[in-house]
Length: 437
Image 1: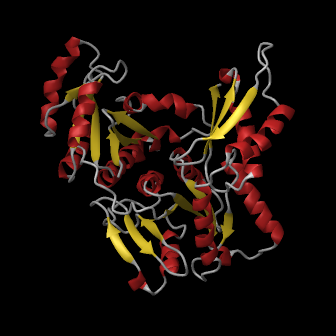
Image 2 (image 1 turned 135 degrees about the vertical axis):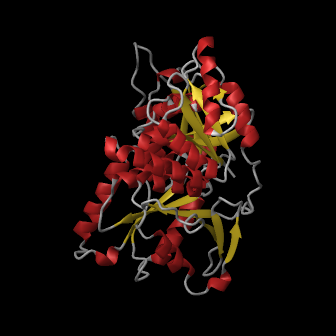
């Protein structure tokens, strides 16, 4: 069960710098990907063999002075509700501001560990400023410099100490886990209720730890899986529902705890930026995807042309990953609800596909021969052999080449598309690596 750490603080205290510092082992890998606009705000940090997720709340603030402080205050509230630990970042050069006092007051009431971090302690003279921070009433400040990395090791030790130990997931018995995610009001709860129907007694609720997702076991009509439901776990704070940050924080857990994500899109509103944020979280966690266009009963014209246009629009926004099923359904009238479950099950099985090495080479090598990677600096790149790595989370293929460093992202994408054309891997992400033969 992953832990979630939120970084809060006023603007320009170095939240993003600290975020990059904490996730840097992975950051290099992250930035190659297409579409890393706003998902800079979420990453994983590994320290001493433990891994946790980090969220930088700074990327979600609307920048105008009057709503500004109010927005950040809301975010601090959301962070205290959703995270397991809060890093409260202040600027040691500026000392304590009124604003810091306000936030400290919210954090003191929160029922979760808070670590006070005084950033920008770049040289010894700055350390004298740390005593000022005791008046925030949050214990000893950790003096660090996110820019140079000084003090961050001690901070991470403290973070691991303060985070609750990982509990064994109760729902880890090889049964697939489906999470329903999407913006507020896209119909997540309605579709879960439609799945479960009135026969609540077939359902067993396993609540994980306090702040986790709830697993609902669903076994009827030949299905057997857990629904990961994060809605309705905690009381809703006085946070306005349209907060984009809110839906992202809410989704992180559900996505991390699932195998297949059912992404709900509101047919009456089309695909919005917030849907894209959630989609990027799904991609980043390598989860399988089924897109459900809900409230289809409210769309007046349901001709094939409309359906095709809608599908194209969705795939265009989510490119380069376009190999996933899209279902037009209605939770209210229960139209195609069953299809959603069937598709989620198929997509889950696609994650488990094993392709024999001889078959892979027989199909892929002629394709590579016909369209080899572009030669660079007059060097010809030859791919000799391909195999699938056994027992990985998602299907992973390794192509062995003489000069792997010259094979760029577009060609890997070409290889991935060819694999998808020849085998059914719909909805499942794929890893393609090129190694020295």
